[in-house]
Length: 218
View 1: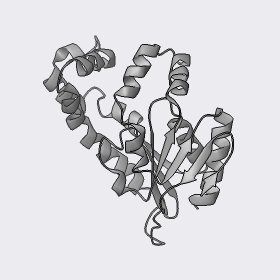
View 2: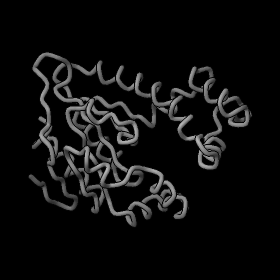
View 3: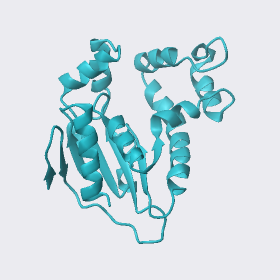
């Protein structure tokens, strides 16, 4: 089944339905590579009333000064990842993660459990009958697709993603590096319930998100 428009969506797998009266009617993961339009889809779902847990926002929260997460990061990577005020220097940490073998796995082992715990606290608290949405870039990498009633994958051609990132001030070579470090299309396709081809405008994607809600998420 497909929804056509400036962006297109395909229903690839049956969406599980939760029994009435047991929390949210659906718990949905939204994922996609950097520059794909994933966050635009999540914002559209939020405007329609969904309760959203945003993995990127939570990832920042769990390493705020004074948190268990920041202490663990400093223990692993050293004080050089702190800025002058004692907060996390994300640029310095990113440099270490991309340059040191095994560093990415170590960072993931610290952060992923903390992020997941906070996210599920938000999702589990969604009102009865609501839609609960987890915006999670690393769904494939954390092997957690089976936890959700549906998985929405947002995709776009690499060239389009690079141009979108360049418009945000990201160097094109850095954009290619970031894209290459993430899961590939085949990996995302294997877990998708709904696949979105986002080659159009933000307005196209917003319109498509509304039609997805009405057609498949009610």
